Length: 496
Ligand code: BES
Ligand code: ZN
Ligand code: ZN
Image 1 (cartoon, rainbow, N blue to C red):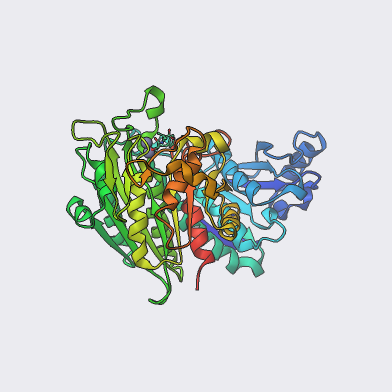
Image 2 (image 1 turned 90 degrees about the vertical axis):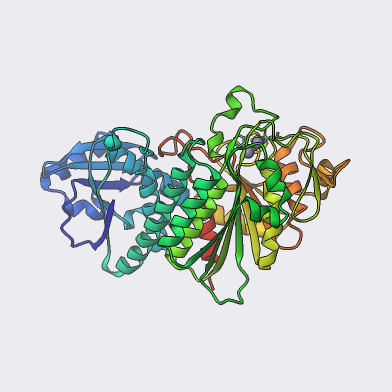
């Protein structure tokens, strides 16, 4: 998909003209009104006077133009309620509508999507990244790869004064959108193909293209040499070797403390000997989406050349049952020296993350954020429209909630009070990998991770709720690519 940014005098040749309206807007108030011929003005005005189109939220009408192509009328709802959240959905909805009516190029006026308090650069970025996300489909495994009607060109029109900021926003949005879709590709790849080895090779491929990322892959031998007993323990039951992926990006001065992003990379989670039953094994090829988010975010940050130092760590394993599997009751010695009593082999994510949290210490990080498809309990607690945010640091919690809001990857806090620590204290080992009660496992899991993250500022995102696209998000079924926008936004905020 190509993007162009032009001023309002530009004679657009796109076949779809997008007219967005708030409730109570007059048809002639739209910046692009002058692009319509007399006959088209008449037919649009008639839709308004007939109340066939009222600018209601999510309302759309598509009509053929007397000139050429189609006019797409898109409602934005009440002006007072317009915000970035609605903009995200509207941008995607426009793409879905264009695909439905086979409109292959679109003209969109940026100013008509503006929101109070937001720069046009931000508006353009959000519109662009969500257009790119909505254009995505996972067709790699289909014989007919062209089954997805792709939009070839988007032309943004804006006032002369805003040209350069809109161009900048579009540039950022294209990069971020592309890497969100890359994370979706990784997540949608079936478990039989997406092994720790393949994931590591994808990362190496990225480092060859983005030459400012240094990649180190620790194989099983080096993982053992680092005494990462947690990762080794979970990997035991699989024929696939574990990998520990390290990505280092230096965009600021060497002495600036880095941000460390850690992503759970379980390429398939069968549950291990505590085998998942029936439907609960569905989607478990996506259990590496935290890792995919970290990998893609680093690639995006490097391509954007952000002035910040960032490290990405992805412990990648497959969790399988077999004669060599780790067992309930096993005591694993982690890299930190702490031991974990395995009470359930299906709570494997929190186990492998411990070694990554310890590995992160060597960077003396400014902040560590881990992101993981960690618990179904988080889905029960929060539903499917937000990720869980868990951190003992109240100030950080507020900051990250805002990052979520502004990035489109929404997060919502759960408590991390001391009282919950009891849950995961071990009997025969230092810690046990599941809580003493069956309740509040999203919190128990985070409390468990926290025991390995006390040497730096830390937050945990549980993305089990949001790993898959749900109805009403105007995105192709499958992996959502959650977390990429969040981590890039966080890195942008932290630029020197
Ligand atoms: N990968 C799962 C969590 C998950 C479940 C993510 C569904 C997305 C959708 C994790 O490894 C797991 O199996 N967790 C268990 C923990 C339990 C055994 C304490 C769970 O949530 O059921
Ligand atoms: Zn599991
Ligand atoms: Zn898992």
